[in-house]
Amino acid sequence: MAITVENVPGALAEVSSKMAEHEINLLTGLIMAEPEAPSGTIIVFLDLTEADVDLAGLISELGDLDVVLDVEETVKKIGDMAVDGTTNATTFLGERVVILDIEDIGAMLGWLIETFSSGGNAILFDMGKKAGSSAARKLRESYGLSGRELVETFLSLQVAAGWFSYEVSLGEEGMISSIRLYENFECLPLSRRSKKPVSQLVRGALAGVLEEAYGRRFDVVEVKCLAKGDEYCEFLVRPSR
Image (cartoon, rainbow, N blue to C red; front, side):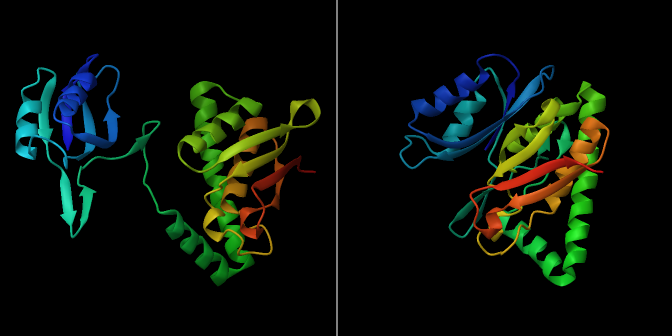
């Protein structure tokens, strides 16, 4: 259900306390509110199996809470499956984002490479570089970031977005010399299926970010890859000559 509440301290506590009072199990939840907005939304997926109140009764009791402005059941039932039917755009840093299944991504990228071979790799690299440059430029212009700080900020944001986790190694003059990515989304669905590294989209993104961060071009070479059985994807970073 989606619960619209006043944007005040304690609103979530009141709602969750009411659920606990009736032995309702909160399975997942999402809280959305802007700092200055008068209200926010709590989206919850509930298990009422052991509850001592039915859904209609719960909606009525939640609606009676002073902090609650509206309560709506949003579930869509498809056979034995319950799907969140909330109509709401997913945003990240104020931008609209979408969620794609990791296996679907693997199928799309795999088809592109199989169909166009080296041309497909080039397309993916250029796509990634364009996206990486654009993202890094926004960070530089909005927050005044540059160098390693900009690169790590970009990587940290991708961790939050579910792309991968990372480690950065430094070389001469504090310049980034290598980047390790764990659970890289691009290579994960192709794990142990290739004899050579396959990360082109992410490799391009790293090249674009590095160029924006340091104001010069870099060669980014993947030397280890999940797709060929390594524990992580590793990219060596060298200034282009």
